[in-house]
Length: 236
Image (cartoon, rainbow, N blue to C red; front, side):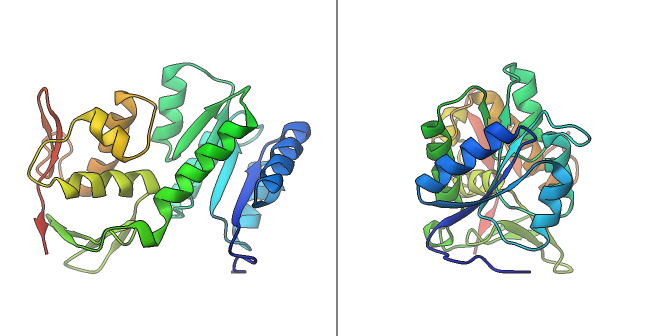
């Protein structure tokens, strides 16, 4: 796979079937120290992902043939953990939750201010910088979690499960307070999320699916009534 060139600048793939919006977003990002490539649909985007590495994807939800949510699910099913920001004209809470459940890291409702898009992308990229990650490790049941990497490793067979940037950041926040409950508001603050408590609940549910053997009776990511969530893990 072709590596990123001019690595001092973040590489963004903009995916939108609306040529005008695609070009406007691309031009604005280029003016603010990003390097962009564009795709008019999910198929074009997936082909580019086979050739280039990107630091983040900006993906419109309402695309023909394969929607942005369907595309995001396909990316995550292929264990690609590139951060994804969804652009949507759908303002309902349930629609935004569906986007996050698909594996997206953030969303932005159309119409939006281009400056806000830049700020959200920078926030996502901050969360994924390796040098900012804490150097420690945790045993969580059969899993080993090294906060330097966005993944879980099975202690028994070295199987790896990729985590999205939000999932990994959330798990780091819980691990930093292992054994003590952390409120949803505090987790949202630590994860640099502003979408409310439901967003944290969605991400906790996604993490449980990857960590817990029985998500209906979680052993490791527990709900503490009235206080938030608590991780049971052993620091090593």
